[in-house]
Amino acid sequence: MDNNLISIIMPVHNQAGHIERIIERYINKLKKLPLPYEMILVVNGCTDDSLDLSNKLKERYENVKVINIEKSGWGRAVIAGLKSSEGGLLCFTNSARTSDGDLLQSLLYATANADVVVKANRKIRDSWVRSAGSILYNIECRTLFDLSCWDINGTPKIFPRRFERLFSLTENGNLLDLEFNIICKEEGYPMIEIPIFSSYRHSGSSTTGLRSAFKMFWKAFLISRERNQK
Image 1 (spheres, rainbow, N blue to C red):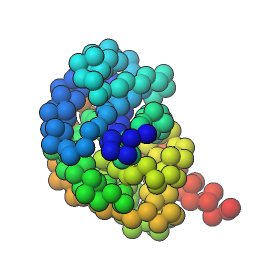
Image 2 (cartoon, rainbow, N blue to C red):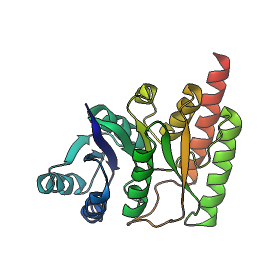
Image 3 (cartoon, rainbow, N blue to C red):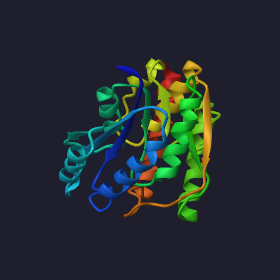
């Protein structure tokens, strides 16, 4: 472990169309960071050329690492990245929709506030349907778990390694972000939310549809019920 190193975890799922371009943008922008960093690309369940392209990036940049896991899953990829990280400051983010400027801004906040969790609070969605769904999901989570933060799923999320309980995340899918926020509340980890006004996606479209959104609503309710029964 290196306390002066930042570990940036990027789950990669079927992103061959833009992964080289955005990682190169990140690397160019992150030259402004005051600390060195490692970028961990976690290729998960891909059926395109994402793994080959990620390995090319690893060969091109010495601070890029690649992990390949067979099964897909946002939470599964984040957990794998955290386990392989070496930095004293940990970050994970959605590489399909995080701009280089937003990533740099979030990391600069985190390096200046070493004893807090820093997370994004996206203010704009790419459609009114997603905006309405996000509002309802956040209201549900805030109500069920007494959370004070908004945009439960907002990334980047950044935290110091000494917040050890955040290494005990277990959710393999989209509910990992809810679990993250619950742990922060239970442990009293202070949190700063950074407003993000961009809704830009590098390519493709969101994998969250009506069916997956309903599953998130329902599973959040089940998690709440299980916790209340303990």
